[in-house]
Length: 309
Image (cartoon, rainbow, N blue to C red; front, side):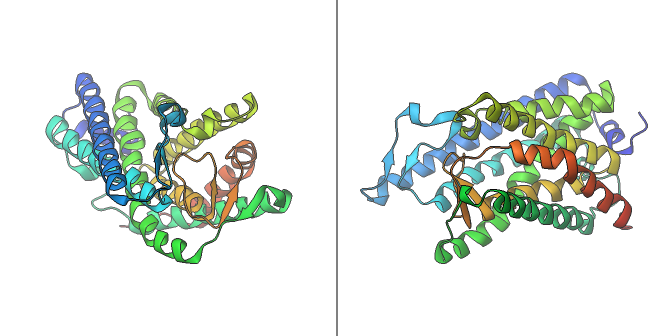
């Protein structure tokens, strides 16, 4: 195996059954964390005393959507993201206890992490997401309605700045770190791109953005978008031989979405600047595969050289 990032898997115990055990133990920690944070949310509801707060029927909780009406989107956002603390702890424990190798080896083969490279990935992709939203608005302004509420938005902003990187970093450490290295060290780099991306897609297709679509085209575009963004992040990681660009890109993608555009069928609503009636990805998928993927790669690999650390 010639890729320096994938070779990091050999620094510790690399038996295949340890990766199976580590995958399930990490996901189990996430499930436990989700149960704990949901319990906190229901405890909040029980003392809230707001007559507009309703716990909807299980059928209304489509695809894992938090079954709460009348609760602030900020509260729902915080509760949903706190579960990633448990997921992060599960990944850290798995690497330390099962594989006995440094946690840094999930990120880079260098002696230290390049925060500048993470920032480059974040800045370039965030700008591309802003341009995507701008183009979508210019093409169909009737799909957008102003949702900006300054008081709520500026409370939400620092929360997003802290919790979204927690969520995206944890997902990257698991999918493009732990799984990519484990699979790549045994099955090669292309399987390391495809298999974690399929799992990433499968874990997202129960989201209400997918399950509430009115047409198969909407469903297919979202499912394919989840796979493509996962595969792109995996490809970036292998080409860069580190996880740093992927960490920045994923954080930029989610932060731009939470801050700029929300929808009625979002798995986690947010007090974003704009509201659209329904989240779908046909336009994003076409723009991403036709332009953004290539433009981002040109900028970060040709114009912005990897800084020396």
